[in-house]
Image (cartoon, rainbow, N blue to C red):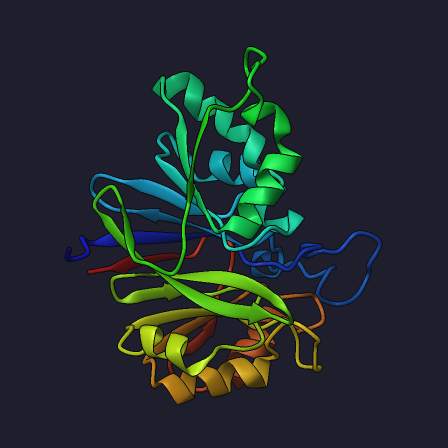
Length: 259
């Protein structure tokens, strides 16, 4: 199935604590540049017929309101950490207005966490007003969400398996510090790659800025955007000036149109 034109909106580009970080008065957290304010990482993917989000972090409700998202068909989950799934309860507003359940797509590890954390939505006896969810367990096999084809990509967040997703010529990966060769082959040929770049200093489970740049260059991707950024990386404008041609820092509200 060919991929239709897509509109990608960065709902959030921050790490688990967001930027500004609570209690911090560093130059990034006190910056007056709106691009230095980062909600928890997530993207909105829209085709002519289908609307999905990748991850529902703690800022999900505000992100949907900010972007005036009136329709939602599905949620794809990358992994079971709270900064990527804690806002799921708020899909119940879409249940109310659309009069149907929301489709969720997650691997077995994330499914286990969803069923535990949102137990009331999966209970045999359901209380009125809870989220209505259709949970689909996915593997590394390609699948479709409406008219959008999806290729799952396995990456590693230290020892935790995380799913990235390729939609046509666009690939989105967050929370990774290792990608195996077989999965790199799934990314090659993308026009745009989104990749996490937490900070400059080495981290146990995230790519650094230099490691992310090296990955983009190794895969020969013409355009890349870095996400899942911490306040430790630095001021958006200053870091952007250091990046090679074709590589950018993403920011909240950034929109890409993929043909």
